[in-house]
Figure 1 (cartoon, rainbow, N blue to C red):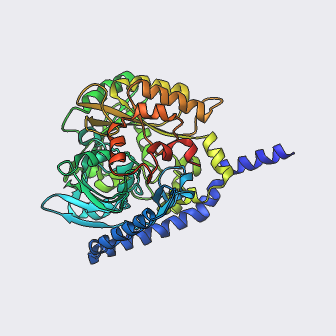
Figure 2 (figure 1 turned 90 degrees about the horizontal axis):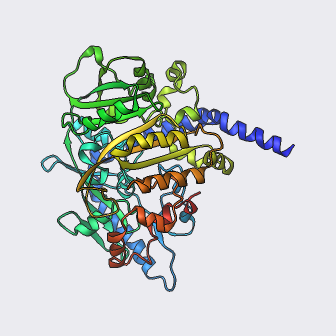
Figure 3 (figure 1 turned 120 degrees about the vertical axis):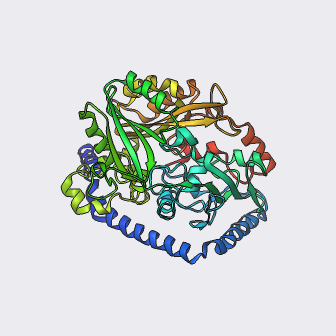
Amino acid sequence: MVQKTEGLFEHILIHYRWIFVCLFLLPLSFVFDIWIFWRNYIVFKLNSAPSKHDDKVKNIQRQIQSWNKIQGKKPFMCTARPGWQTMSFRQGIYKDIYKKINVDLVDILHIDHEKKTVHVEPLVNMGQLTAMLNPLGWTIPIVPELDDLTVGGLVMGTGIESSSHIHGLFQHICLSYELVLADGSVVRCSPENNPDLFYGIPWSYGTLGILTSVEVTLIPAKKYIELTYLPFKSLDAMSVYLEEAVVDDRNEFVEVLIFNENESVVMIGKQTDEMDNKGFNPIGRWYKPWFFKHVQDILNRSDAKTEYIPLRDYYHRHSRSIFWELQDIIPFGNNLLFRLILGWMVPPKISLMKLTQSETTKKLYENNHIIQDMLLPMSYLKETVIFFEEQVGVYPLWICPFKLPNNPGFLHPAKSNVEIYVDVGVYGVPKVENFKPRETTRKIEKFVMDRNGFQMLYADTYMTREEFRLMFDHSLYDKLRKTYGCEEAFPEVYQKVCKEARR
């Protein structure tokens, strides 16, 4: 009887969570987004953010200096930002035991039109940044997909987008960082000034200091993206075409959605101020189909299709459906009637969904879901797609090529000074029988490591410390931790990202 009750409860949690999401989380998310938008707009227009920034940094300094005065063994430090507010689907257990440093770094500080740079605090997110920059005629070279991804998260973790085959990862468009160190001092670093620290910060997950601001390069923004969809019925043909597309300088944006082992759509885009009205498609409007469903319809065509999409709509094309994750939460979310009635409130905030998860929901999610991004040399793309088909059978797969330069730090290309890699994004419910999250992820990690690849650290990591250090180059990182007294002040990256450190 108990088993039957538990089974019924699990069935309800899996199949009917949409009731709670639609009735409560969608309205809450919508109200929260409105408040955030007006707060950011007013603060920037009043130009008060730069003057307040120094006070915020001093407050962080005071907290760290106070920590330094504690006698005896002290707990590690971390930011006080709750784990449920991050974009990772997991929450750090370490937040419960470490000394939490309060931060309130949410503002765009300055746009320098002459130097073509924007100076921001680390909790500025992509939605906030594009809303401010695009109307002024500017954008940043890489705009990672989801609205709520923050600059700090993209630096300390990683960020990638369909322009990364030209510009690299998000860290490669950053010009300087401001950091509060373990002794409470403030340091600013760039490739010219303290290059070791500059190249050591990306992927360091807040274990070298508290990031307080970032300077990012700007490029001119045009009104539209001319996006061409090319359907393929063969993995071989798609792979060959993709290798050619990423080295063609005319292609500003390149990505692929793979819908099964043979069928995929390659998307090639470029910015433009001109458009063909017949091909205009404002995909960001609430009543429009989810973008991945729109792309899937292209598979029925025998030829390419070109559309003109407003720039900001393109940047956040996967946001409304959280790539394709929302279909597992609201199964009818792409239905026309739902889009017309409630589509204007979509998507629910990932942070609110995490906050309202029960322990049972978390366990069910872990045992019946996979979310991973694996970075591998492009030469292994076909092999990787076949491997993921065998291990998880999750589709679509998101394929995003990126350039990896041979800079100091955690990541290096396998063969040369600059190499083209691909991010293989796997998000959804596995279709294979007897899916076991730990065992499957361990196989995936080994597959990636054997091919000189890397795992994005927001997702579940089951590697041992030794394996983790083999995958990522710790030589500069270890040197910086000794130099700046981090060993007693902050945990290592592994201690924050391994599965045992996350609930």
